[in-house]
Image 1 (cartoon, one colour):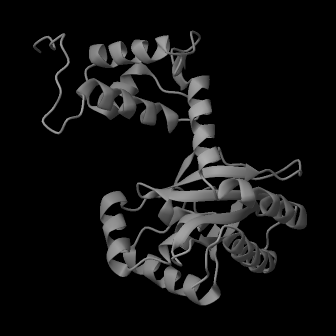
Image 2 (cartoon, helix red, strand yellow):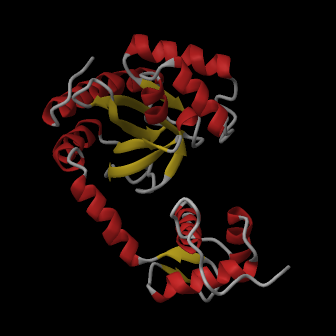
Length: 265
């Protein structure tokens, strides 16, 4: 393999290749809660190990990432938390949602989440954890498939068929558990049920032993702004209890919609 040029060139699109590559590495590392090894990062990014290592050490000097000397895994660094918090400060719907999310947690005694659709997945932006010893917890900043999560399916149910088909073509179906949806027909049938019911259910489709109910928060155009969910372990969340929580989630989502200046279509 020829040695890569030392001088970074600006591509015809005006982008700088090394910056694009570094950003891609940050996304790869950020998606892994347990950190990533150099070989795995290089493979995911489609780069040589030497190029990957050079980019990683540059990011490490800025403390954007850090390596665990015990196992050689790379992790996201603290400065990126500040950047993420700046996004939350700018996101006008997160802060006013928090009191209502806390109230929903207190009413249900289960974990409450807020997430947005991004690049065909759900990104968890905020969470109010249950005070129960046994509880369902997602990682804030974590990504979950739209087709295998209550928040994702709730948002999908608001989209035109063409947009849903495009997402399936982009992301496909990820079989997280034996209960995960893996066929387009099954997804369309469930989305029809969600539209009729008003909220979505995740019945152990992303995590075995965890059930969720989710509903959409709308913007001022009556489009999905984000989604909120209640998550709990199956021992506490029976089908009947999940239905009760679904109604509460819808009521809270509609209240948040009004608070942020949105409208329910």
